[in-house]
Image (cartoon, rainbow, N blue to C red):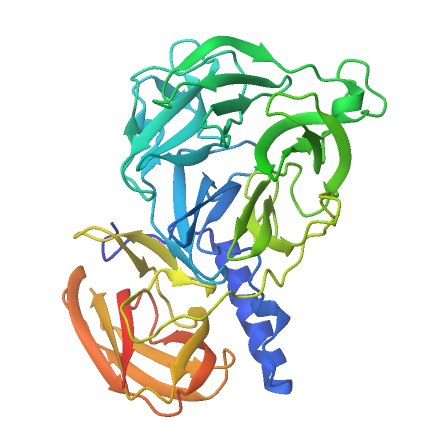
Length: 467
């Protein structure tokens, strides 16, 4: 939680670059009434750097589990916690904060790297790699929660497995047998028991053959393309293993098999090496009749190999079940459905944000903060119907506040309302504000543009429209 004289956490260079993105978008839209590509929806999270996406479909929503690259990481991975986001339309993503960190594991030392979560019998199990404090060796831990958004707690008090390798992927087969895969430079699996926090049998090493995982050019030490980051799933009767290939720069490749344990056959490239990062990490799901491929790159301002950002593409399998090759885009996938503005919407539900960040509120949950003049939030595909008459928001300000300027269709599109925010006496001292609305009809992209004086203006917890 910030104080009135808090220092903005995002480096000044990144903030300036984000402002440049907004300025470019405003200038472009002024000349062209269509939304500017500068306001594209990939990467899907802009309030911080994220990596290693692990999507999970549950009860009509996609829950996205990610790593978190700290701001300013330029020469090494600086990762202390994991984050959760969710969406029911693949366009607007809600920030659920960090329900799991290195502090969750008493035995962990550092390195909150790539993990994956799965649901079983109403409980959620999140498998993550981190270095064990006493030895420095990488181990796989398991955290558990009764909610997809946490909080999570250490299920064991010690590692589930430890052999110095990383990147766990969990998969529950149609017969109920669960598997945990992981590894770099090797590939391993164990058969998990029904409790999901223990396993039966030995830790098994998967043979990395060139037939199974392709041929790495110019390497005798590592003859196959397999590098790290397995993502194992089943579609029909075919098992897929999508993985980061070669190094460095990694590309995404995949193999298939008739069983969960092989034998694997190499099938080719899913995503070539591209984007401003030397790693990549895949997650694949089906949701609402479509297939989605998650990955990361370094596309945000200040981004790179140690400051990555999660993105997603929609795709269709070929008729024979193979995965088509795809490229990174700035557009992202089409929205599935619309957003209802007449129910409470968390301010941290965002399609595209500029300048703002998120934080925990004193009462629990998240709010949008670090708002300065010129910052903005885009919410995509808002279904106003025959028209909204009022807008209300829950706000807090330790300064003199500012204004929420509501526009539709673009960042400088028609203004449908202006809501004044006065000082409330504290960053977590909340009050309700409202204002009349005119012209918000049909299904439109909504922009919350924030204006005011210098410094931080106010926080926003949630908002809604009314007829």
